[in-house]
Length: 263
Image (tube, rainbow, N blue to C red):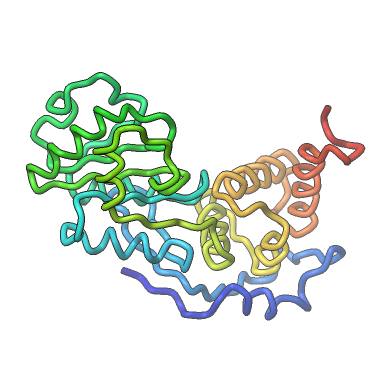
């Protein structure tokens, strides 16, 4: 495991505040500086590295404690794009569990779904799950001394569960919230997304983006892809003016008050 320096992203922004302004350009011949991050890089068993920050640290701790969970089930919940499915996949690969969407368990035999498996991930469990099927899967896994991991946008206490037995079992489950990405995680993700496209992003560029981007993995991915497309189309290096123009274009396309917005 590679551990980065324990310096928060707020210090990154402060350190680069003098270097970043709306009129500043990043010189192409300035060597990129190292960005210290309070992040750990965890191998995700064949997938991209999973980055650990304050917003997901508790959830990662529960994954690390498996199989010594004090309950047969764990629910990871949080908004779309917070990384719960990625972390569930880390656990699935580690535990040899199966994975299924909540909508795909309806009216199915739990033995048919599980086979010989002792672990199961049910994604989007609060999106209208078949309660009887979930109840039987829970019981079967418990009989096998196995485990169930659920992902959702809300904790089980807020689900509209009519089946009393299932409600009781979910009430005894471990529950952990994954918050939207914080500044440290945003910085780490931006660096990785740029690196995946073989783009060296200067600290000034990261610092400029940080307060101007929506806190979601989807928004970060869209932004970096748009920056890459613009740089390739214009045959230009990725500089601060180019990044600023792309951000303004993306914001104008979604802002109803902008004269450039699409209607």
